[in-house]
Amino acid sequence: MHELIDILNDQPPEAEVELAIIAPVDGDSDDITVDRYFVDGVLPWQDSEDDDGAEIEDGELSIWLVGGEEGDVNAFLDAIEQPDA
Image (cartoon, rainbow, N blue to C red):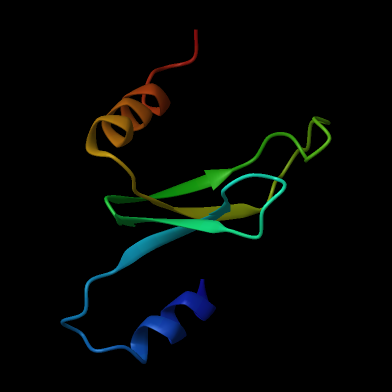
């Protein structure tokens, strides 16, 4: 978290903050695409599983910067706010 704060502290306070998602266009090309989104929310997240799907007790806390198409962000936020069934 301190790294992000340090980076943002060096920027002009009136600057907009966006997420830039960089992805390859396809596997056989060197082309990339860049999707840009405003940060619509910040979500603390603690994984209950590691990358292999094994359960972990006290997972490391991550901070997600959430952004995307408005409908997708709203659907995502609605889904994670649902109580466990």
